[in-house]
Length: 205
Image (tube, rainbow, N blue to C red):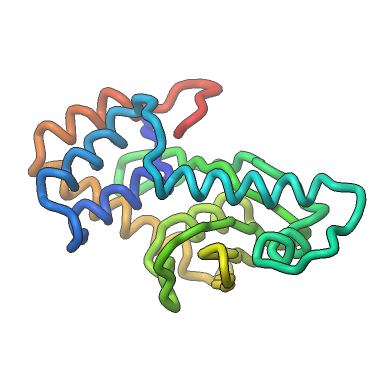
């Protein structure tokens, strides 16, 4: 039986597609299918800001000296400095009779915590509560703690999550919901079965 890859970007893309209140149905579906296609695409403006901010934090952490400034970038950098950047994590999981390979690439792992650096223009408390990212990274890494470090360029916030006994079940529920949806979307199902079959030594986006 084939085994399929599951990544945070895939599950989050699906969640945004069925819950998005800000985009038109056509635009939301286009983004969902773009993720399913696994084709490379240029980052949009919001994504590029996130990439740039993460690169700034990484650059600060790479310095041998302290900078005489205090801002969200340096404060977040001080938290993750000394950690391991861009570590891949993966673990197999079975939902019903189907096997899946969970895969992700962390921003930073430091001691017992996985850190993910986010940049957003509109933060509200608990913004990432329903994200699959911390669940998958906690489950795959077997580490006890996960923290989102979030900034809008002016301020920064921290969301902490722990590896409790319900992480695996929540992931299975998300996968089951996603697979159930695909049964009624022939186009999306065909793309998933074609593009997301697990291969040896694969790297997932």
